[in-house]
Length: 436
Image 1 (cartoon, rainbow, N blue to C red):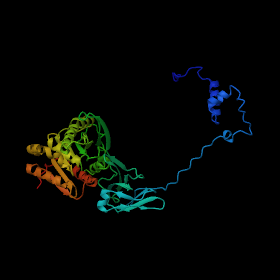
Image 2: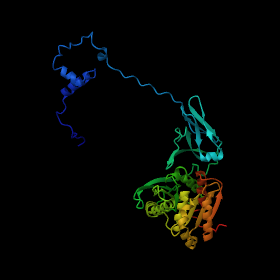
Image 3: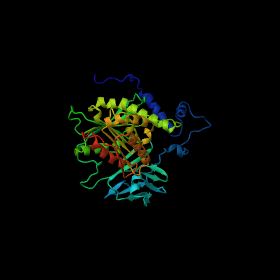
Image 4: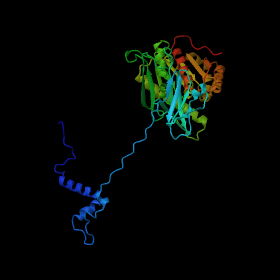
C-alpha cells in the first residue's frame, strides 16, 4: 500500500461552519474590540444609555486598520577582503567603524618584522595594515580591537584550541620552488578522524590518521607507523591543520625522500587536573594517563583498522612541546615496542620522575632504539630544560642525536623538524651514534 491515512484524521471532524464563525469573531476582534465582547454584543441590543455610534461619530482609530512601519534597510557595509597577499606583502583589513584602535597579533610575524603593527582607519570605517614582504611560510595571527582579541572575520582560515581561536595566512613559495609544507601537484594521501571509547578515561575520544597515496589500491601492502603528538592546548587535528603533516608526507613520499607510512595523531589531553593539584602531580598523572590511552586504546584501534607492519622497527613516536615530552616518555620506556623516537622543543619536565628508570634501562634502550632524535630552537623558552635532559642522556650513555637550530617555540620550526625527521625513519642503516 503506497499511501495510508494518518491516524490523527477522523472523518467528519472538520467543521467548516465552526471555522468560519471563529474567523469572523477573530476578524472583528482585530478592529479594536475583544473577540468575546463582539460575540456577546451580537446576542443582545446595546444598553439604552449607550447609543450606537453613527458613521459620523465613529472613532477614526476604530475604523482605520493599523499598518506596520516598514523596516529600515541596514546600512551598506563596505566590501572587505582580508588577508591579501602580493609578492609576500600581506595586508590585513577589518571593518570596525566604532573602534578606537586595532593591532595585529602574531608571534611569528613579529619575530621577522617587529611590531606593534597598528592598523590605520579609513573614512569608510575599514582598518588596514600591511606587513612584509614575508618569507614563504604559514603565519598564525589575530586582531586586537580595543582590547578584544578576535579572529579575522573575512578569512575562513581559522582554528581553535583550549586557549581560544586564531587565524592563519599562507605565503606561497616562488614559482617552481614550493615550500616543503606547501600543497604540490603530487599524489595525495587521506586523513580520517576516528572516534573511540577510551577504557583509560571512560570518555569518548578522537584520533586522526593519515594514510599514504596508494593505500587503497594495494590491499596486501603493510606500512610502518608514526605516532605524532601535538602540543599543550591543541588537539589531534592540529598536526594536519597547522602542522601540515599530511602535505609534508605527501611531498617527501613523492620525491622518494621518505618511506610511505601511516601517521597516527591522537589527542594528547586525556586528563585535566583539579585546580588545587600540585603541578608535578598533575604532570605525572597526565603522562601516565596518556601512555595508557595510547598503548591500550589507540594502538589496538589502528592495528585492527589499518594494515600496520608488525615489529618494533616499524614503530616511531615523535611530538612537539608537550607532545615531545610525551613521545620521549613513552618511547624511552617502551623501546621493546618502538624503535624510532623524536622530540621537538620538548617539555622535558615530564621526564623528571622517569629518569632513574631510563638510566637503569640504558643498555636496553641502546640495543632496541634505532634513533633518538631531539631538536630545539636557540630562542625557545624550553631550551634550558632540553639541555638538562641531554646532559642526563649523556651521563647515562644513551645514544641520541641532539641539534639546536634557529627559531623559537613556533609551528614554523616544528614543520621543518617533521620534514627533517621523516626521511630518517624506517631506514635500514646503522643506529644513531652517541652525541658528542
